[in-house]
Image (cartoon, rainbow, N blue to C red; front, side, top):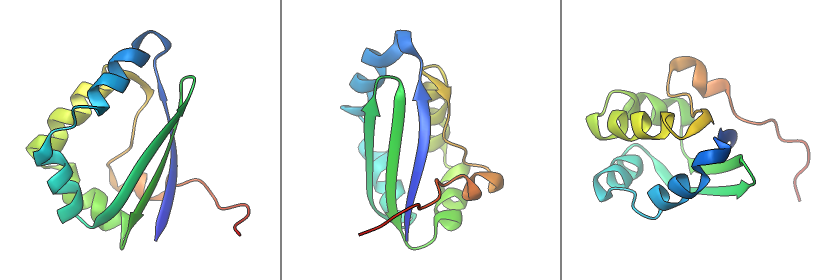
Length: 103
């Protein structure tokens, strides 16, 4: 399955956000893969962030990551940089953007 998400970085923290994503901890990327993601790409347009995640089960991915210490630490770091954060709660599984058209 493919999930698209929209989050927002704080206008005064864009450089820090970009820098953080050049240094994502290997432990976190390994945990994301182990949780079932085969691909995760983030695009930024100004302060808008668009994520596309390929995984078997998005709700399962969130559940697997939600309580992992490495993800908790990363999300705390991201919370300082974001106006709209990625929701790892059970409700977050329904936060994907609706597909309007596909080729």
